[in-house]
Length: 109
Image (cartoon, rainbow, N blue to C red; front, side, top):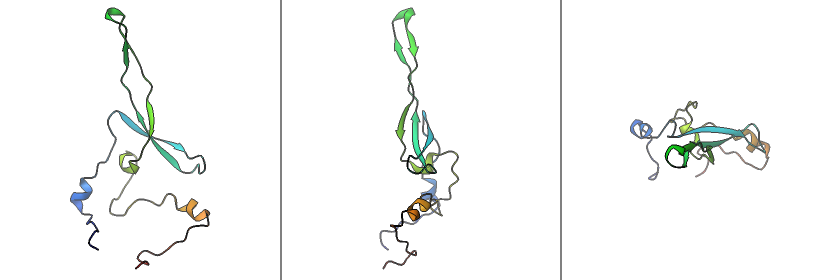
């Protein structure tokens, strides 16, 4: 296949891993599937400074939660083998829908 990319050591080492600055990855349970964890990024904010002179003080701002699309790559607790792909964490609920059809790898030509 001409568009297939070779996954070699230099490519794997070039993938960003680990936490992102001023944030941490958190998870919430899914509403429809509580066994799935919805990834969010909790982003720290700097304080707001109010007042002037001796009256000036820093007022903390709460963190902001955003949906995290980075996958397991920025999860410090994730154990990944990039040569094997990602775990099939949605397989059980896809099978339970009874509307999906499974094929063996390479069965499409």
